[in-house]
Amino acid sequence: MIYQDHAIKGWMSQACLEWLYQQAGKMRTIVEIGTYRGRSAHALASGCRGPINCVDPWPTTRKGQVWSVDKWAGNAKYQEDGEEIYQDAKKNLAEFDNLTLLRMTSLQASRQFQDASIDMVFIDGQHSYENVTQDISLWLPKAAKLLCGHDYSPSWPGVQQAVQERFPGRFQVIRGGSIWYVWL
Image 1 (spheres, rainbow, N blue to C red):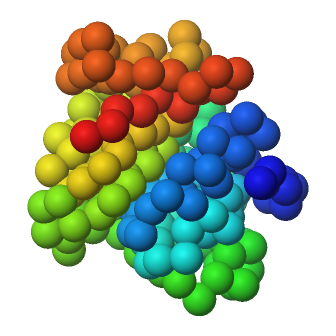
Image 2 (cartoon, rainbow, N blue to C red; image 1 turned 30 degrees about the vertical axis):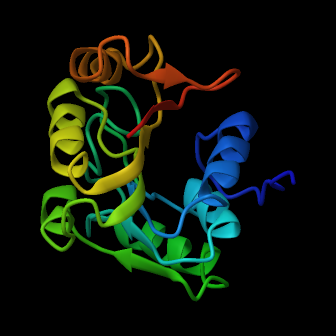
């Protein structure tokens, strides 16, 4: 089956959305780190019928304040209304009764899950080397089947470095996209 893009604002390609949808169909439980307006979460929830937890702090900044220094625009200041983005994510994902939005940091959320309790963890939070390394360390023990993430590309050297160091020779990148993954 093919996932139909719902035109939710974001940076995820159709190839990546399709891959997430296909993998989600094999899973009972999923955690997504970094949800923004819900583009990838929609694909995950369309494929998986079990519980999905979407983790994002959706900072309560207002337009004109810095939202997230490295995720949304390289290392430039990106100005957007965090509360508006959160409300948009709620609206975009409202059709899914198996999906919960957790408005907190990745670290805070990781404390709510036991080891090996989540079939699939998808990491798409902040993209600095330090943040990706931390997310991998926090969520690898929680994942039972699949750990994956977005933006494995030269545009995000911190993502590439963190993944290469943690999983040398063990990870793969999807064809036609920028999702890295490791089967556990």
